[in-house]
Image 1: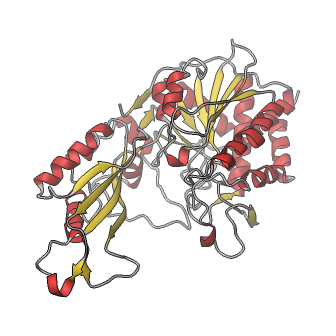
Image 2 (image 1 turned 135 degrees about the vertical axis):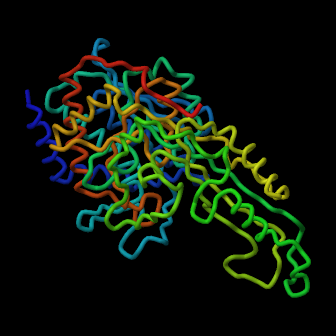
Image 3 (image 1 turned 90 degrees about the vertical axis):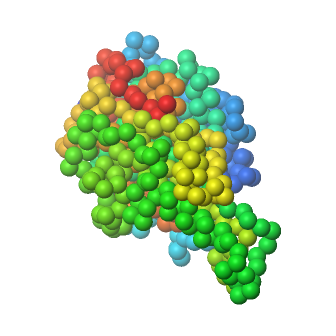
Length: 471
C-alpha cells in the first residue's frame, strides 16, 4: 500500500502530466451560465454527462434529485464503505456567472482554458469548477493508491449557486436523513492570499435590496423646470447617504452587528487581508476602530452595487422621473436579515425620506454562519494541512463573501470546514477569471493528504457543536 508521501507525489505527477488541465478544460467548455433563462439543457448536461460518469468511475452511486424551486435538479452521489467510519459531506456548484464573452481581452475566452504562465484563464476555473474538480481528483488519487477511502463520502452538486441557490435549503430540510454526515468539507472562495493555505468555517450572509423613487410619468426640461420639480436622483442620493456615510460606516442601528466575539477577534489577530496585484485597502474606510480583517470577516458592510437615474450612457437636459439603486448588506452571524427592511424603512422615515421605496431584491437569502475555530474537526483538518505544506493554515471564522453554508450548518447541523483553492486576485465573476496553477497544485496535495489522513484516522468526531447561524 502506498504511503502518504507516495500518494501525494503520485497526485502531483498526475497534475504535472496535464490530466487535471484536461479535465478542467472539458468542464469549462460547457456553457453553464445559470443567470441565462435558456441554460437548463447545458446545466443538466454538466451533471449527467460530466460529473455523473466521473463519480461512477470512482465507485459512487449517483442520481438526480428534483429541485423544489427550479427546473434544474441537484446531483447526489455517495460512496459508503463502512457505517462505523466517519462520513464526509462535500459540495460544489457547476454553474457559473455570465461569460461576458466580448469583454475578455484578445486571446482569451470564457469557454476555453488558456494557459499564460501560472494563470489558467476561463469561466469557472476559480468558481467553482476548478475547486470541486480538485477535490474529486484527490478522492481518485487516494482510491488509486489503496483501493478504498477508509471513510464514507456523500456529494451534493448544484447548478444554481450563482442565482442564490434556489431550492437548496428546502432540499436539505426534506433530505436530512440522506445527507446526514459528520462534517462538511468543501471548497469555494479564495484563500487569504495565494501563498497562505486557508480554512474558513462559515460565511457572511448576503441580503440585497432595492431603493426606488418614482415621482412622475416622464422627464421634463431642466431649463424650464429645474428648481421647480423634485429630482428623484437627488432624493435617492441623499437617502443612501443617510444609510451609510461617506466613509462606508453603517448609520442604521438595525444593520449593525453585535460586538465581535472574543474568539473571533483572537482568530483574526495578525491577519492582513489583501493580495499583491490586487487593489490597495482603503485604511480609512468602513467601521472606525476595527482592523481590516475585522471589517471584512467580523463586521457588516452596506454596499451600493448599482445606481440609475436618467440615461447614464447618453445624458440629456431633463429632470428624470424616477431613480433606483440596488444595495447589499453583507452580514455576520448574530444578525437576523428579516429585520433589515423594517429597520431601513423606519430609518428613511426618520430622515425625511418617506417617498423612497425599499424592498428585498429576491426571496432567497444566504444566511450568515460561523464555526468556533477551536472545534475538533477544524483542528483535525488544520493538522493535516500543516503536515502536507509544512505551515499552519490561516483559520478564518467565516469568509467575507457569502455561500449557502447555512443549509449545512443550520439545517443539517454540521460543522463546516471550507478549504479554498483560489486566491483574492482571481477575477472571480469578471472577465479574465483564472485559476492560479501553483495554488491548484498545492490544493490537490492538500486534499489528497487530508483524504489519506481521514481514512487512516477514522475515529468520528462530535457533529452538532460549535456552529452558529443568523437565525
